[in-house]
Image (cartoon, rainbow, N blue to C red):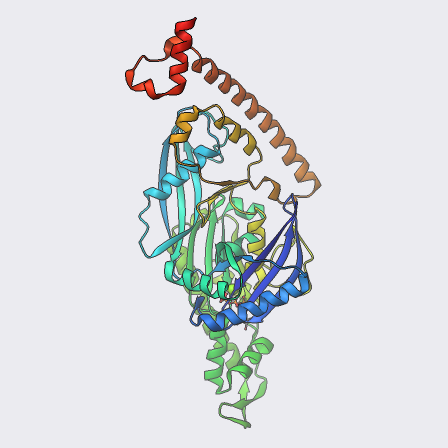
Length: 494
Ligand SMILES: Nc1ncnc2c1ncn2[C@@H]1O[C@H](COP(=O)(O)OP(=O)(O)OP(=O)(O)O)[C@@H](O)[C@H]1O
Ligand SMILES: [Mg+2]
Protein backbone atom coordinates (compact mmCIF):
# COMPACT_ATOMS: atom_id res chain seq x y z
CA UNK A 1 0.00 0.00 0.00
CA UNK A 2 1.42 3.38 -0.91
CA UNK A 3 1.64 6.22 1.56
CA UNK A 4 1.49 9.96 1.04
CA UNK A 5 4.41 12.10 2.17
CA UNK A 6 4.68 15.86 2.48
CA UNK A 7 8.25 17.18 2.55
CA UNK A 8 9.01 20.82 3.29
CA UNK A 9 12.38 22.52 2.94
CA UNK A 10 12.27 25.81 4.80
CA UNK A 11 15.14 27.78 3.30
CA UNK A 12 16.39 31.32 3.80
CA UNK A 13 15.24 32.38 0.33
CA UNK A 14 12.50 29.92 -0.65
CA UNK A 15 10.22 27.30 0.87
CA UNK A 16 9.50 24.21 -1.15
CA UNK A 17 6.74 21.73 -0.31
CA UNK A 18 6.42 18.48 -2.24
CA UNK A 19 3.68 15.87 -1.93
CA UNK A 20 4.47 12.40 -3.17
CA UNK A 21 3.31 8.82 -3.01
CA UNK A 22 5.78 6.19 -1.83
CA UNK A 23 4.91 2.65 -2.88
CA UNK A 24 5.78 -0.68 -1.25
CA UNK A 25 9.25 -0.89 -2.79
CA UNK A 26 10.14 2.71 -1.95
CA UNK A 27 9.53 4.21 -5.38
CA UNK A 28 8.58 7.86 -5.09
CA UNK A 29 6.02 9.56 -7.32
CA UNK A 30 5.78 13.32 -6.99
CA UNK A 31 2.16 14.43 -7.22
CA UNK A 32 2.31 18.09 -6.29
CA UNK A 33 4.65 20.89 -5.35
CA UNK A 34 4.59 24.46 -4.13
CA UNK A 35 7.37 27.03 -3.93
CA UNK A 36 7.06 30.29 -2.03
CA UNK A 37 9.40 33.15 -1.22
CA UNK A 38 10.74 32.62 2.26
CA UNK A 39 9.83 35.09 4.97
CA UNK A 40 10.62 35.27 8.67
CA UNK A 41 13.72 33.08 8.26
CA UNK A 42 17.26 34.40 8.53
CA UNK A 43 20.44 32.41 8.23
CA UNK A 44 18.53 29.19 8.65
CA UNK A 45 16.53 30.05 11.77
CA UNK A 46 13.02 31.37 12.32
CA UNK A 47 13.06 35.05 13.20
CA UNK A 48 9.33 35.74 12.79
CA UNK A 49 6.95 32.82 13.38
CA UNK A 50 3.89 34.51 11.89
CA UNK A 51 5.60 35.52 8.64
CA UNK A 52 7.41 32.21 8.33
CA UNK A 53 4.18 30.30 8.88
CA UNK A 54 2.35 32.32 6.21
CA UNK A 55 4.99 31.66 3.58
CA UNK A 56 5.23 27.96 4.50
CA UNK A 57 1.43 27.70 4.27
CA UNK A 58 1.48 29.15 0.78
CA UNK A 59 3.91 26.49 -0.43
CA UNK A 60 1.87 23.72 1.28
CA UNK A 61 -1.44 24.93 -0.18
CA UNK A 62 -0.01 25.11 -3.71
CA UNK A 63 1.33 21.58 -3.37
CA UNK A 64 -2.00 20.31 -2.00
CA UNK A 65 -3.93 21.95 -4.80
CA UNK A 66 -1.77 20.35 -7.49
CA UNK A 67 -1.70 16.93 -5.81
CA UNK A 68 -5.43 17.08 -5.08
CA UNK A 69 -4.81 15.45 -1.72
CA UNK A 70 -4.95 16.57 1.85
CA UNK A 71 -2.17 15.64 4.21
CA UNK A 72 -1.78 16.65 7.81
CA UNK A 73 1.82 15.78 8.72
CA UNK A 74 5.14 16.73 7.20
CA UNK A 75 8.81 15.83 7.07
CA UNK A 76 10.82 19.01 7.46
CA UNK A 77 14.43 20.12 7.20
CA UNK A 78 16.29 21.99 9.92
CA UNK A 79 19.33 24.08 9.12
CA UNK A 80 22.75 23.07 10.44
CA UNK A 81 22.70 26.42 12.32
CA UNK A 82 23.07 25.62 16.01
CA UNK A 83 23.36 21.92 15.18
CA UNK A 84 26.13 20.09 17.00
CA UNK A 85 27.44 16.61 16.74
CA UNK A 86 29.30 14.44 19.23
CA UNK A 87 30.63 10.94 19.15
CA UNK A 88 29.74 8.31 21.71
CA UNK A 89 30.18 4.58 22.33
CA UNK A 90 27.88 1.84 23.54
CA UNK A 91 28.50 -1.73 24.65
CA UNK A 92 26.05 -4.54 25.39
CA UNK A 93 26.19 -8.22 26.25
CA UNK A 94 24.28 -10.62 24.02
CA UNK A 95 22.94 -13.32 26.38
CA UNK A 96 21.46 -15.40 23.54
CA UNK A 97 24.55 -14.90 21.36
CA UNK A 98 22.33 -13.97 18.43
CA UNK A 99 22.37 -10.36 17.20
CA UNK A 100 18.91 -9.27 16.12
CA UNK A 101 17.46 -5.81 15.59
CA UNK A 102 16.62 -5.68 19.30
CA UNK A 103 20.30 -5.93 20.24
CA UNK A 104 21.30 -3.39 17.58
CA UNK A 105 18.70 -0.99 18.87
CA UNK A 106 19.84 -1.64 22.45
CA UNK A 107 23.51 -0.93 21.71
CA UNK A 108 22.74 2.29 19.79
CA UNK A 109 20.48 3.45 22.62
CA UNK A 110 23.24 2.64 25.12
CA UNK A 111 25.65 4.83 23.15
CA UNK A 112 23.02 7.56 23.16
CA UNK A 113 22.55 7.31 26.95
CA UNK A 114 26.33 7.40 27.47
CA UNK A 115 26.59 10.72 25.62
CA UNK A 116 26.66 13.97 27.45
CA UNK A 117 23.85 15.91 25.76
CA UNK A 118 23.65 19.56 26.83
CA UNK A 119 20.23 20.28 28.32
CA UNK A 120 19.40 22.94 25.73
CA UNK A 121 19.90 20.48 22.86
CA UNK A 122 17.64 17.82 21.37
CA UNK A 123 18.87 14.77 19.47
CA UNK A 124 17.69 14.51 15.87
CA UNK A 125 19.87 11.68 14.51
CA UNK A 126 21.93 8.92 16.14
CA UNK A 127 24.06 7.38 13.41
CA UNK A 128 26.23 4.32 14.04
CA UNK A 129 29.46 4.33 12.04
CA UNK A 130 31.39 1.39 13.46
CA UNK A 131 30.33 -1.88 15.08
CA UNK A 132 32.64 -4.21 17.01
CA UNK A 133 31.57 -7.76 17.71
CA UNK A 134 33.58 -9.72 20.32
CA UNK A 135 36.54 -7.34 19.78
CA UNK A 136 36.41 -7.75 16.01
CA UNK A 137 36.53 -4.21 14.61
CA UNK A 138 34.95 -2.63 11.51
CA UNK A 139 31.97 -4.95 11.26
CA UNK A 140 29.91 -3.54 8.42
CA UNK A 141 26.62 -4.96 9.68
CA UNK A 142 26.36 -7.10 12.85
CA UNK A 143 22.80 -8.25 12.06
CA UNK A 144 22.41 -12.04 12.35
CA UNK A 145 25.93 -12.58 13.74
CA UNK A 146 26.76 -14.76 16.73
CA UNK A 147 28.57 -12.96 19.52
CA UNK A 148 28.54 -12.49 23.24
CA UNK A 149 29.33 -8.78 23.15
CA UNK A 150 28.68 -5.92 20.75
CA UNK A 151 30.07 -2.39 20.74
CA UNK A 152 29.16 0.59 18.59
CA UNK A 153 30.57 4.05 17.79
CA UNK A 154 27.88 6.58 16.96
CA UNK A 155 27.70 10.14 15.74
CA UNK A 156 24.91 12.00 17.53
CA UNK A 157 23.50 15.05 15.75
CA UNK A 158 21.53 17.43 17.91
CA UNK A 159 20.01 20.84 17.50
CA UNK A 160 19.18 23.67 19.84
CA UNK A 161 15.77 23.05 21.42
CA UNK A 162 14.62 26.64 21.02
CA UNK A 163 15.33 26.86 17.29
CA UNK A 164 13.67 23.48 16.75
CA UNK A 165 10.59 24.46 18.72
CA UNK A 166 10.25 27.75 16.82
CA UNK A 167 10.49 25.86 13.55
CA UNK A 168 7.86 23.38 14.75
CA UNK A 169 5.58 26.24 15.82
CA UNK A 170 5.87 27.90 12.41
CA UNK A 171 5.01 24.65 10.61
CA UNK A 172 2.14 23.83 12.99
CA UNK A 173 0.67 27.30 12.52
CA UNK A 174 0.78 26.58 8.80
CA UNK A 175 -1.67 23.74 9.51
CA UNK A 176 0.45 20.58 9.54
CA UNK A 177 1.93 18.40 12.27
CA UNK A 178 5.59 17.37 12.16
CA UNK A 179 6.34 13.77 11.39
CA UNK A 180 10.15 13.85 11.03
CA UNK A 181 12.91 16.43 11.25
CA UNK A 182 16.07 16.00 9.20
CA UNK A 183 19.28 18.00 9.22
CA UNK A 184 19.49 20.13 6.08
CA UNK A 185 22.99 19.03 5.07
CA UNK A 186 22.12 15.36 5.68
CA UNK A 187 19.06 15.62 3.42
CA UNK A 188 21.10 17.31 0.66
CA UNK A 189 23.74 14.59 0.98
CA UNK A 190 21.12 11.84 0.68
CA UNK A 191 19.83 13.47 -2.52
CA UNK A 192 23.20 13.87 -4.20
CA UNK A 193 25.62 11.11 -3.12
CA UNK A 194 25.92 8.00 -5.20
CA UNK A 195 26.76 4.60 -3.69
CA UNK A 196 30.47 4.75 -4.60
CA UNK A 197 30.88 8.18 -3.06
CA UNK A 198 29.17 7.00 0.13
CA UNK A 199 31.45 4.03 0.32
CA UNK A 200 34.68 5.93 -0.43
CA UNK A 201 33.98 8.96 1.74
CA UNK A 202 32.70 12.30 0.53
CA UNK A 203 32.18 15.91 1.62
CA UNK A 204 28.82 17.43 0.69
CA UNK A 205 28.30 21.19 0.93
CA UNK A 206 24.92 22.82 0.28
CA UNK A 207 25.45 26.54 -0.32
CA UNK A 208 22.11 28.32 -0.44
CA UNK A 209 20.98 31.91 -0.02
CA UNK A 210 22.24 32.63 3.49
CA UNK A 211 23.83 29.43 4.74
CA UNK A 212 26.39 26.79 3.84
CA UNK A 213 25.72 23.35 5.33
CA UNK A 214 28.53 20.81 5.32
CA UNK A 215 28.36 17.06 5.88
CA UNK A 216 31.19 14.53 5.79
CA UNK A 217 30.09 11.02 4.99
CA UNK A 218 32.60 8.22 5.53
CA UNK A 219 32.29 4.54 6.40
CA UNK A 220 28.69 4.60 5.26
CA UNK A 221 27.59 7.16 7.81
CA UNK A 222 27.56 10.88 8.50
CA UNK A 223 30.63 11.62 10.61
CA UNK A 224 30.79 15.40 10.74
CA UNK A 225 28.57 18.40 10.11
CA UNK A 226 29.32 22.09 10.10
CA UNK A 227 27.68 25.36 9.20
CA UNK A 228 28.61 28.80 7.88
CA UNK A 229 26.15 31.65 7.90
CA UNK A 230 27.25 32.70 4.43
CA UNK A 231 25.49 32.11 1.13
CA UNK A 232 24.76 33.67 -2.23
CA UNK A 233 22.78 36.57 -0.74
CA UNK A 234 26.10 37.83 0.61
CA UNK A 235 27.39 38.18 -2.95
CA UNK A 236 24.27 40.23 -3.73
CA UNK A 237 24.84 42.46 -0.67
CA UNK A 238 28.51 42.94 -1.60
CA UNK A 239 27.60 43.88 -5.18
CA UNK A 240 24.90 46.26 -3.97
CA UNK A 241 27.40 48.07 -1.75
CA UNK A 242 30.32 48.02 -4.19
CA UNK A 243 28.23 49.16 -7.16
CA UNK A 244 25.93 51.55 -5.21
CA UNK A 245 22.93 49.85 -6.73
CA UNK A 246 19.67 48.50 -5.17
CA UNK A 247 19.64 44.88 -3.94
CA UNK A 248 17.24 43.73 -6.66
CA UNK A 249 19.54 45.09 -9.40
CA UNK A 250 22.59 43.63 -7.67
CA UNK A 251 20.84 40.20 -7.60
CA UNK A 252 20.21 40.33 -11.35
CA UNK A 253 23.81 41.50 -12.02
CA UNK A 254 24.97 38.44 -10.06
CA UNK A 255 22.72 36.08 -12.00
CA UNK A 256 23.52 37.63 -15.40
CA UNK A 257 27.22 38.49 -15.13
CA UNK A 258 28.45 36.39 -12.22
CA UNK A 259 31.17 34.26 -13.78
CA UNK A 260 34.41 33.13 -12.15
CA UNK A 261 35.91 31.69 -15.30
CA UNK A 262 36.82 35.01 -16.94
CA UNK A 263 36.76 38.73 -16.27
CA UNK A 264 36.01 41.36 -18.89
CA UNK A 265 36.40 45.11 -19.30
CA UNK A 266 32.89 45.58 -20.67
CA UNK A 267 30.90 48.39 -19.14
CA UNK A 268 27.32 48.06 -17.87
CA UNK A 269 24.97 50.80 -16.72
CA UNK A 270 23.15 50.39 -13.43
CA UNK A 271 20.63 52.55 -11.51
CA UNK A 272 22.02 54.11 -8.35
CA UNK A 273 20.67 53.53 -4.83
CA UNK A 274 18.11 56.18 -3.90
CA UNK A 275 17.86 57.58 -7.43
CA UNK A 276 16.43 55.24 -10.06
CA UNK A 277 16.95 57.77 -12.80
CA UNK A 278 20.66 58.33 -12.20
CA UNK A 279 22.77 55.67 -13.92
CA UNK A 280 26.18 54.51 -12.92
CA UNK A 281 28.73 53.02 -15.32
CA UNK A 282 30.42 49.91 -13.96
CA UNK A 283 33.15 47.71 -15.43
CA UNK A 284 32.49 43.95 -15.33
CA UNK A 285 35.99 43.65 -13.87
CA UNK A 286 34.62 45.02 -10.61
CA UNK A 287 31.69 42.59 -10.65
CA UNK A 288 34.17 39.73 -11.18
CA UNK A 289 36.43 40.90 -8.31
CA UNK A 290 33.53 41.33 -5.85
CA UNK A 291 32.03 37.91 -6.63
CA UNK A 292 35.43 36.19 -6.55
CA UNK A 293 36.36 37.72 -3.18
CA UNK A 294 33.19 36.47 -1.48
CA UNK A 295 33.20 32.99 -3.05
CA UNK A 296 36.90 32.54 -2.34
CA UNK A 297 36.41 33.48 1.30
CA UNK A 298 33.43 31.14 1.68
CA UNK A 299 35.24 28.19 0.12
CA UNK A 300 38.36 28.88 2.22
CA UNK A 301 36.28 28.75 5.41
CA UNK A 302 34.71 25.49 4.28
CA UNK A 303 38.15 24.02 3.50
CA UNK A 304 39.27 25.02 7.02
CA UNK A 305 36.25 23.24 8.44
CA UNK A 306 37.25 20.12 6.53
CA UNK A 307 40.72 20.33 8.10
CA UNK A 308 39.13 20.79 11.53
CA UNK A 309 37.16 17.56 11.06
CA UNK A 310 40.43 15.56 10.83
CA UNK A 311 38.64 13.37 8.29
CA UNK A 312 40.37 14.60 5.10
CA UNK A 313 42.38 11.38 4.82
CA UNK A 314 39.19 9.35 4.83
CA UNK A 315 37.64 11.16 1.88
CA UNK A 316 38.28 9.00 -1.14
CA UNK A 317 35.85 10.42 -3.64
CA UNK A 318 35.92 14.21 -3.23
CA UNK A 319 33.58 17.14 -2.79
CA UNK A 320 29.96 17.50 -3.88
CA UNK A 321 28.69 21.06 -4.14
CA UNK A 322 24.96 21.67 -4.22
CA UNK A 323 22.48 24.45 -3.33
CA UNK A 324 21.51 27.55 -5.32
CA UNK A 325 24.89 29.32 -5.15
CA UNK A 326 26.68 26.43 -6.83
CA UNK A 327 25.02 27.44 -10.11
CA UNK A 328 27.60 30.24 -10.26
CA UNK A 329 29.79 29.71 -13.31
CA UNK A 330 33.35 28.65 -12.44
CA UNK A 331 32.69 27.74 -8.80
CA UNK A 332 33.66 24.11 -9.42
CA UNK A 333 37.09 25.03 -10.78
CA UNK A 334 37.73 27.49 -7.92
CA UNK A 335 36.70 24.90 -5.32
CA UNK A 336 39.06 22.39 -6.87
CA UNK A 337 41.98 24.81 -6.34
CA UNK A 338 40.93 25.75 -2.79
CA UNK A 339 40.35 22.12 -1.77
CA UNK A 340 43.86 21.27 -3.03
CA UNK A 341 42.99 19.27 -6.10
CA UNK A 342 40.13 17.28 -4.59
CA UNK A 343 37.68 16.13 -7.29
CA UNK A 344 34.64 18.43 -7.21
CA UNK A 345 31.26 18.01 -8.82
CA UNK A 346 28.18 20.21 -8.84
CA UNK A 347 25.13 18.11 -8.08
CA UNK A 348 21.45 18.45 -8.55
CA UNK A 349 19.12 15.97 -6.82
CA UNK A 350 19.32 12.40 -7.95
CA UNK A 351 16.10 11.51 -9.75
CA UNK A 352 16.82 7.80 -10.27
CA UNK A 353 14.29 6.68 -7.70
CA UNK A 354 11.76 9.43 -8.28
CA UNK A 355 9.09 9.76 -10.93
CA UNK A 356 6.99 12.82 -11.67
CA UNK A 357 10.17 14.93 -11.48
CA UNK A 358 9.46 18.26 -13.16
CA UNK A 359 11.99 20.55 -14.82
CA UNK A 360 12.08 23.13 -12.07
CA UNK A 361 13.39 20.50 -9.63
CA UNK A 362 16.40 19.66 -11.81
CA UNK A 363 18.36 22.28 -9.93
CA UNK A 364 20.90 22.15 -7.05
CA UNK A 365 18.57 24.41 -5.01
CA UNK A 366 16.15 21.48 -4.57
CA UNK A 367 18.56 18.87 -3.21
CA UNK A 368 17.34 19.29 0.38
CA UNK A 369 13.64 18.77 -0.35
CA UNK A 370 14.30 15.72 -2.55
CA UNK A 371 16.60 14.40 0.20
CA UNK A 372 13.68 14.59 2.63
CA UNK A 373 11.59 12.41 0.33
CA UNK A 374 14.43 9.92 -0.16
CA UNK A 375 14.96 9.77 3.61
CA UNK A 376 11.30 8.88 4.08
CA UNK A 377 11.62 6.16 1.46
CA UNK A 378 14.53 4.53 3.30
CA UNK A 379 17.54 6.02 1.51
CA UNK A 380 19.86 6.52 4.43
CA UNK A 381 22.40 4.69 6.56
CA UNK A 382 21.66 1.07 7.44
CA UNK A 383 20.62 1.94 11.01
CA UNK A 384 19.58 5.16 12.68
CA UNK A 385 17.72 6.33 15.74
CA UNK A 386 15.53 9.21 14.59
CA UNK A 387 14.17 12.26 16.39
CA UNK A 388 11.32 10.17 17.86
CA UNK A 389 13.75 7.63 19.30
CA UNK A 390 12.67 4.94 16.81
CA UNK A 391 15.15 2.62 15.16
CA UNK A 392 15.03 3.05 11.39
CA UNK A 393 16.62 0.22 9.47
CA UNK A 394 16.64 -1.46 6.11
CA UNK A 395 16.13 -5.05 7.21
CA UNK A 396 13.49 -7.27 5.71
CA UNK A 397 13.17 -10.07 8.26
CA UNK A 398 11.54 -8.21 11.10
CA UNK A 399 8.94 -10.96 11.50
CA UNK A 400 11.70 -13.36 12.55
CA UNK A 401 12.87 -10.88 15.13
CA UNK A 402 9.40 -10.52 16.56
CA UNK A 403 8.77 -14.25 16.68
CA UNK A 404 11.85 -14.62 18.88
CA UNK A 405 10.02 -12.77 21.58
CA UNK A 406 7.32 -15.45 21.69
CA UNK A 407 9.89 -17.80 23.24
CA UNK A 408 10.63 -15.52 26.14
CA UNK A 409 9.23 -16.23 29.56
CA UNK A 410 5.97 -14.25 29.41
CA UNK A 411 6.38 -13.12 33.01
CA UNK A 412 9.89 -11.90 32.34
CA UNK A 413 8.57 -10.16 29.27
CA UNK A 414 5.92 -8.40 31.29
CA UNK A 415 8.54 -7.12 33.72
CA UNK A 416 10.52 -5.53 30.89
CA UNK A 417 9.55 -2.09 29.72
CA UNK A 418 7.53 -2.03 26.53
CA UNK A 419 9.97 -2.41 23.67
CA UNK A 420 10.43 0.70 21.58
CA UNK A 421 8.60 0.76 18.30
CA UNK A 422 10.82 -0.51 15.51
CA UNK A 423 9.89 0.81 12.13
CA UNK A 424 10.08 -1.71 9.33
CA UNK A 425 11.37 -0.03 6.26
CA UNK A 426 11.52 -3.17 4.22
CA UNK A 427 8.62 -2.15 2.07
CA UNK A 428 10.20 1.25 1.63
CA UNK A 429 13.37 0.04 -0.10
CA UNK A 430 14.58 1.90 -3.16
CA UNK A 431 14.01 0.49 -6.59
CA UNK A 432 17.57 -0.36 -7.54
CA UNK A 433 16.76 -1.36 -11.07
CA UNK A 434 16.22 -4.92 -12.32
CA UNK A 435 19.75 -6.26 -12.06
CA UNK A 436 20.68 -4.80 -8.73
CA UNK A 437 17.32 -5.57 -7.22
CA UNK A 438 17.51 -9.17 -8.46
CA UNK A 439 20.93 -9.60 -6.89
CA UNK A 440 19.85 -7.91 -3.69
CA UNK A 441 16.75 -10.05 -3.35
CA UNK A 442 18.75 -13.22 -4.04
CA UNK A 443 21.40 -12.32 -1.46
CA UNK A 444 18.78 -11.27 1.07
CA UNK A 445 16.80 -14.48 0.59
CA UNK A 446 19.87 -16.67 1.09
CA UNK A 447 20.80 -14.69 4.17
CA UNK A 448 17.24 -14.81 5.51
CA UNK A 449 17.07 -18.59 5.02
CA UNK A 450 20.37 -19.01 6.86
CA UNK A 451 19.23 -16.68 9.65
CA UNK A 452 15.90 -18.48 10.02
CA UNK A 453 17.73 -21.81 10.18
CA UNK A 454 20.06 -20.46 12.89
CA UNK A 455 17.15 -19.05 14.84
CA UNK A 456 15.18 -22.29 14.63
CA UNK A 457 18.20 -24.18 16.01
CA UNK A 458 18.65 -21.65 18.80
CA UNK A 459 14.93 -21.77 19.63
CA UNK A 460 15.00 -25.53 19.83
CA UNK A 461 17.96 -25.29 22.20
CA UNK A 462 16.07 -22.77 24.29
CA UNK A 463 12.96 -24.96 24.31
CA UNK A 464 14.96 -27.97 25.41
CA UNK A 465 16.50 -25.90 28.17
CA UNK A 466 13.14 -24.61 29.28
CA UNK A 467 11.64 -28.04 29.87
CA UNK A 468 14.43 -29.85 31.72
CA UNK A 469 12.62 -29.69 35.06
CA UNK A 470 15.57 -30.96 37.04
CA UNK A 471 17.52 -27.83 36.17
CA UNK A 472 14.95 -25.55 37.70
CA UNK A 473 16.13 -24.21 41.09
CA UNK A 474 14.09 -24.90 44.17
CA UNK A 475 14.54 -21.36 45.32
CA UNK A 476 11.64 -20.26 47.58
CA UNK A 477 11.88 -16.74 46.14
CA UNK A 478 10.88 -18.25 42.81
CA UNK A 479 7.50 -19.34 44.24
CA UNK A 480 5.75 -16.40 42.69
CA UNK A 481 6.79 -17.51 39.26
CA UNK A 482 3.82 -19.30 37.68
CA UNK A 483 5.98 -21.14 35.16
CA UNK A 484 8.19 -22.53 37.91
CA UNK A 485 5.09 -23.52 39.96
CA UNK A 486 3.73 -25.50 37.02
CA UNK A 487 7.16 -27.07 36.52
CA UNK A 488 7.39 -28.13 40.17
CA UNK A 489 3.91 -29.54 40.02
CA UNK A 490 4.80 -31.49 36.84
CA UNK A 491 8.06 -32.72 38.41
CA UNK A 492 6.10 -34.09 41.36
CA UNK A 493 3.61 -35.76 39.05
CA UNK A 494 6.16 -37.49 36.80
N1 LIG B 1 23.79 31.48 -11.02
C1 LIG B 1 23.82 31.81 -9.75
N2 LIG B 1 24.93 32.34 -9.22
C2 LIG B 1 24.99 32.67 -7.91
N3 LIG B 1 23.96 32.50 -7.05
C3 LIG B 1 22.83 31.98 -7.54
C4 LIG B 1 22.69 31.61 -8.90
N4 LIG B 1 21.43 31.13 -9.08
C5 LIG B 1 20.81 31.20 -7.88
N5 LIG B 1 21.62 31.70 -6.96
C6 LIG B 1 21.36 32.01 -5.54
O1 LIG B 1 20.98 30.84 -4.83
C7 LIG B 1 20.26 31.26 -3.66
C8 LIG B 1 19.09 30.33 -3.44
O2 LIG B 1 19.59 29.05 -3.21
P1 LIG B 1 18.78 27.98 -2.37
O3 LIG B 1 17.39 27.90 -2.92
O4 LIG B 1 19.59 26.77 -2.32
O5 LIG B 1 18.73 28.71 -0.96
P2 LIG B 1 17.79 28.38 0.31
O6 LIG B 1 17.67 26.94 0.45
O7 LIG B 1 16.54 29.16 0.23
O8 LIG B 1 18.67 29.03 1.46
P3 LIG B 1 19.47 28.37 2.67
O9 LIG B 1 19.79 26.98 2.28
O10 LIG B 1 20.67 29.22 2.82
O11 LIG B 1 18.58 28.46 3.86
C9 LIG B 1 19.81 32.69 -3.92
O12 LIG B 1 20.57 33.55 -3.11
C10 LIG B 1 20.16 32.92 -5.38
O13 LIG B 1 20.54 34.24 -5.65
MG1 LIG C 1 18.79 25.45 1.40
